[in-house]
Image (cartoon, rainbow, N blue to C red; front, side, top):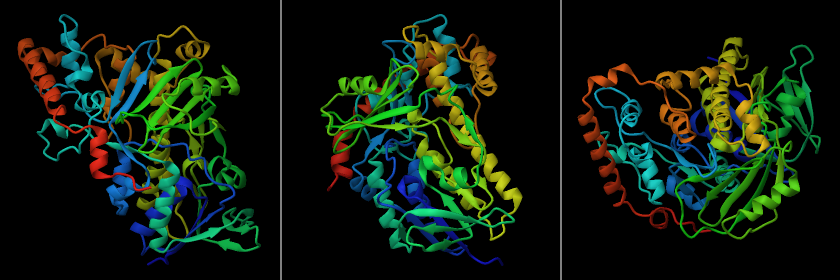
Amino acid sequence: MSEPIDIVIVGGGTAGWMCAAALVSVAPAAIRRVRLIESDEIGSVGVGEATLPQMKDFNDYIGINEADMMQKTQATFKLGIEFVDWGYKGSSYIHPFGTFGEKIGGIDFHQQWSRIRHFSEIEAIEKYSYAIEACRQHRFEFPVEEKSAINSTYAYAYHFDAGLYAQFLRKFAENKGLERIEGKITNVKQDVDSGFIKSVVMASGEEITGDYFIDCSGFRSLLLGKTLNTPFEDWSPWLPCDRAAAVPSDRLESLAPYTRSTAKSAGWQWRIPLQHRTGNGYVFSSQFIGEDEAIANLLKDLDASALAEPRVIHFQSGRYKYSWQKNCIALGLASGFLEPLESTSIYLIQVAIFNFLKLLPNRNPDTALIDEFNRLVDVEYERVRDFLILHYHLNSRDDKDLWRYCKNMPIPDSLALKMEMFRLRGHIDVYRYGLFAPPSWLSVYLGQGMMQDNVDPYVNNIPVDYVKGKFQELSAAIRQRVELMPTHAEFIADFCPSKL
């Protein structure tokens, strides 16, 4: 039986406090002590306020009460993401957290839809998505557990104030015994022979030792990048945006249960509805627009009055080649950054935490564990990377330099194969785990104008009239059921009104 390990988390913010809360909640026997070092002077980026449905899994896993968390973080619900002007100017589609229709005769719904649209009038595919219809009507309720029910075909995520969420997790973790150390790190000491991190030295002179050091230091990547000199893989040729101007604005009158992403001349603008305010930002490429002009464009296109001066964050899309080096594991921005287009930043933190807990090492980590952790992280990062690139590359816009560049740029072979398989006959990979499921890819393909040339040959085994009848039944059932739901604002007021 190996001795329990000591873990030191360097940095707070969303990544640090998610990690701390998970470690003290689910692995107390294997971990002797968890300490988190952060400085109030440094603070955190705190931009990400939109999540994916896996966020609920994380909160449930560590024992967080949903209503309590939502009240204390000014949270709202999220059923998907609306993309405006992405495929072409004037276009709009929603990437839903749910399915499109249901299989007919064992054949994927989109195959039957594509078959019918070749020779007959048919409703847009979004009319067969419960989540999208609820988004369009600004309605929300929890999905039911009965799998045969039409209102079981979706999931949900959250919009929340990332700073308040970190504060919530801090209190949660400290109540379970987490030790927080306030102060700045001035030096990192390594073993002369192995290169393992032995300790971090505080400005006060105190030396903090540990068996494992988890780097949550943000873009500085103090341990993984600066101390261990892990090589960085630059993905900016595929994801050219390198700045984000962020600003809060007044709350919107109608509380939308979705994030909105609007393509602009040199990037895109997000809108995230919270209970007390609205989060906004312009993610842009400095190659195609200056910061002052980007800020002016952001403020001009707000749906409500700004509540503060915009701040600009600089970043580089990419990731460190290894997220686990020696006895250092990096999470969040310290490991890599992929822009917040599909709200994946917090998910990538979460999945790294889960993988670390699954592979929890003793005091002498086996190389195989480290390699497996890095492999799992690689898979997630590359899938997310390809999905984000798809949004930029698959466009018919010829009005601005950024969009022309993205449309014509070379793309990874892995993405090129996915796109070709869909174009040929509508094939979409089904992953055993991780992001993104077929409805996600389908929403972007179709929403941005890519149609399949042929369909699954087995679709013709089902009579056309039967399929059309099923379509009509389904779209009518969705509309009727969604109209019975409370509005999103009504549900929030009843379930989790903020008390702040």
